[in-house]
Image (tube, rainbow, N blue to C red; front, top):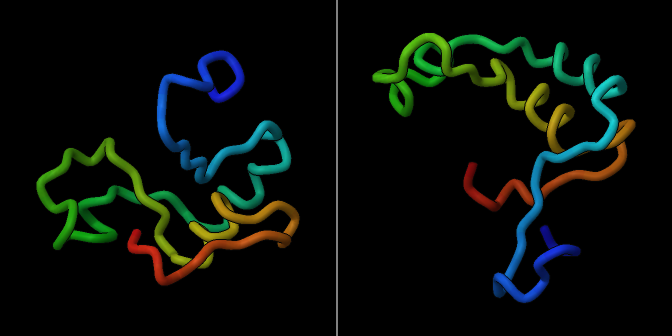
Length: 79
């Protein structure tokens, strides 16, 4: 999007992206996906069971914000 339409937006925030799904499988498995209504009933209690959420913050961080354990995110930014 940034390359093909660079003038279509004022800012672009990229989070949780990868071009290498194969190496992302262990990270994805490290935070077992469960129904969001079960993991966070206060936030997602009304959602059908098909909506999934990482069951642990560590699994979420490893899956979406690191590459081979390098990288990270600012925990001060709300989820």
